[in-house]
Image (cartoon, rainbow, N blue to C red; front, side, top):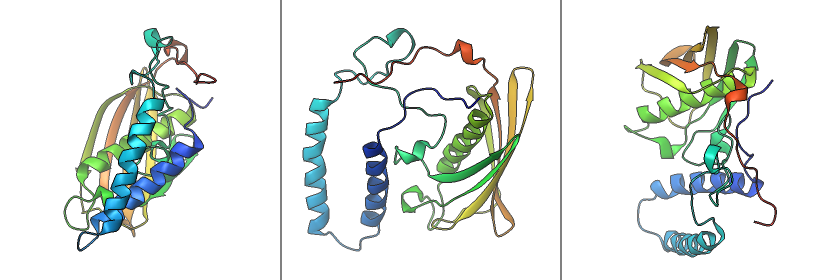
Length: 211
């Protein structure tokens, strides 16, 4: 059974994340100040105020003992976080039992050294795709360790391939992943996670109609 925990993002949220990620990257590439960027900033600042008035008073998620509180809805982080959160990478993944594969392309907003992906974003990427794999297989849990080996610089704006192999022993899931470009391994990751019991998951409050 596929593992989920939380509500799906609204389609509007996903559309916004895509545009924000692209705009940030394009603005970073400008050679000089442009009035268009001032216009975008002003529009977003106005939108921020209006959204704040529509948001819950507390931004603490309605999970567990706080499920009946006045906090915010918790969005499912089991897979495709980048689809609704521009701070996370977007990828394509295919799961086949204990093996998964896919591809990813890192945009400009994830740059560290010139033309290269910041190593911290690679850690976020591997944690995301490995847990996506675990959740699709149906046995998942909190990450307990994650280690990376940076073998080659990871280029921006290039379609890169990745593979994941996992095994489960007792209450631990062990995953080994690789990020590859043209047959050359760029980065390797080793991750362990708790093999949790779904029945132990805390309550998550659904969206509230009319909220």
